[in-house]
Amino acid sequence: MYVLIAGGGKIGANLARSLLRDGHGHEVTLIEQRRDRYERLEHEFEHQVQMGDATEIHVLDRAGIARPPDVVVAVTGDDEDNLIICQLAREKYGVGKVVARVNDPRNQAHFDLLGISATVSATASIMALIEHEVPEHDLIHLLELRKENLEIVEVQIDKSAPAAGKRVEKLKLPDGSRLISITRNGRSEIAIGSTELQPGDQVLAILQPGKEDELRRVLLKN
Amino acid sequence: MSYGERVKALVIGCGRVGSNVALQLAEEGWEVTAVDEKEEALTRLGENWRGGFVLGHGMDVDVLREAGIEDADAVVVATNGDNTNLVVAQVAMKRFDNQCVVVRILDPARADFYRTLGLRTICPTKTAISELMDAARACEIPSREPVTTT
Image (cartoon, rainbow over all chains, first blue to last red; front, side, top):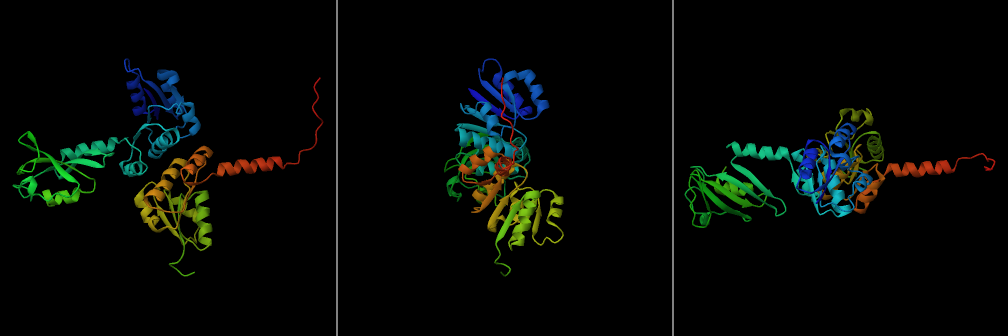
């Protein structure tokens, strides 16, 4: 597989190293703009690293983007650069798969708007893990299925929740949402119509983004 | 023209280019709001600036909203970063549905490509190249003896 990586910082360099590790047999080109970094990388990666601004078309051309690569990965520290690199790769060169790093989670909406996926944000991932640990967030985002426009969330049913003691089929769940499973005392089962919710249950639900508040009202009433 | 009927423009990036665009549009009677991440940029607009000024980055949609992007008639994007400009211009077009977005792109290659994607890109580098070429061609070059080789 031929992988073009834009950005030779820690992520880009480690990624190149992992792809090149014996046995994988991948071909990698790494592009780095800063001369000091480039020189350090060149010691290790030799001809597999090139110096230049990966948002410039002639730099991408020189790196072989016209072949095109199987994957273009944009992991620079600038979200606008990562966006433009992926957009050029896809729209100008017909690259089938792009992966972009999102540095500032607030910029995620721009990536979504311009159809750039997959995206990876360390900050957003860590935030999600923190939220998973901190119970004061009553509805936890576990997984976003961006292409499907769906997400999986977890809620905990407490004693005062309107859903406590009710069967799933009796709940007026919002359109575009469905309960997946119930975890009780460490045991999980698939939620079906006759499943009765009890206080303490951890419930997984799948829903369209934006339906969280409606779901919260039906299950938790906050 | 009475207040309230004026055409509204948003100028994102208030450097040498953006500030002069803002000043000249205001001069022509437009209602102009400038956006820049540096406070010093406001001084470029002069003491008599009566238009708006919002401090913040063009990638920040809250800043764009505060600057009135939702009802701007025209958006001029001229920060000093080509990629920032390309993203902000596309956000203005696709997210806020602005019909008139003009964007400065210094790199001719990106300016040309994004023009094919429907952005109104303006490339000062290309203008400079063609003007310098014209100026060079128009020089009066003193006639020289033809070069002879032996």
